[in-house]
Length: 550
Ligand code: PEP
Ligand code: MG
Image (cartoon, rainbow, N blue to C red; front, top):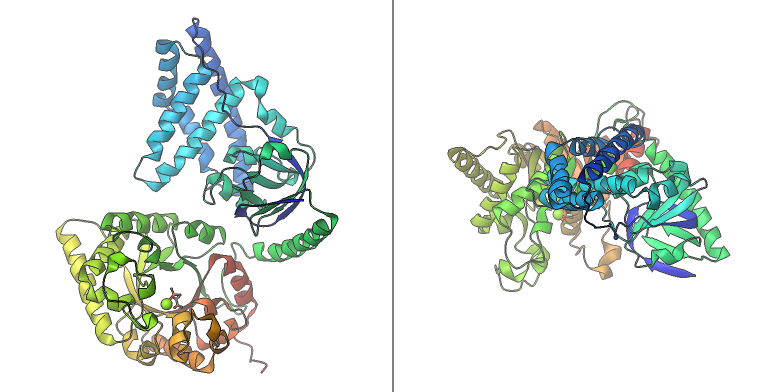
């Protein structure tokens, strides 16, 4: 038995035989041609065949992954018919007297590189789609080595192993015949990965295994832990069979929640949002049907580097997240890097003895007006491209909020003077994560568009227990009465002022507490993407009009 650790791309378990798919296009023939007219003819024929394949794939994709994801094939169809793309190929054949395969390869690489260097995230992502299109053209041209016939001949369920898969590769299989996918290359956010998640195919990449040697061997793909087990023992197989069964039953229930409204059994609508800590998290939020981003930790842009991220770098990141979320709101939490994680370049204070109580969140920002202004400018600029709101972290007094809002106004005025677009209706909310903020939440509520209760810090500060100290684990009592009272009070104060109050932090995703929080009046929950569907199922099972049984 051999075990390899890789990247978990799509969850679930597969147990079966491996089929190694040799779809790498390393050896594209390159030779000169004298009869350029017939070479052009070969290209036009391949183009027609590919165009038909794309129409079939497009229809299949609309059925299995939805029309939004199927746009990949529309884009490929567009490029195939694009004059510049066609002329580039024709020129290589006619002027350089090169063969068609070589012309397609060079042209695709040229266009792919051009797209990869574009400023726009959407366009940059198209770069892989161009290579996918090129593979299709080459498959048709080199039909003697055509791997697609190999694919279409799959008549029994198998685990597919390949160096790299493109969206059309995955879609060209019948879903019931792919048990799982193992690839040597492939990132979590690539299109092929997204498609395997949408289709629910367990998938692992970057395992380091030499895939060519695995053809025909039994294996287990563990898409939860990102593991590949080759030649598993009987014991291992039966262990995984029961894991698989439990997983499938649970996920069937969760998947049935996708697309359903988040509301209680008696019809109260609740916001169910995602907490994410990086740009990559957006995809997971979308996959899990988040109704928005309730809490984007901006710390990832600041940690582990040598200098502050520029306004433009931040702007590009915020814009990418909010654009990906479309019409749904992205709540960006201002920088809140605890002092012990602040890299040298912050250079703000000498080492703090008690970092959790130190210079972080809104304090750090107000003490460093340039840092604050730069981040606000980046966020406001991004607000012109999506629906964004701003959260102020670690508030403990009214004056902090006042100063923060004053700077936010200065930034808006500055942008207006400079003629830079931003959304003037961008909301500003307060994180309630210190006991002080909860106690004065009646006043703070009057200064904010919304409040979000950060239950992790609120618990640590209320109980005076360091949330990062494992030795104090038994004292960090989640759902402690004192914390619950502060939560209830904050929600009531928010509602008196007419603003919504959400919960984030780990306690927000504790389904044993959901009914309690809903009865307090919580308007929404922001949880990690993987917890969204379970939370939806929980919320939909609760009937607030029924009297509590205990
Ligand atoms: C919290 O404190 O609950 C919270 C959501 O913020 P963080 O975990 O980033 O401190
Ligand atoms: Mg916090």
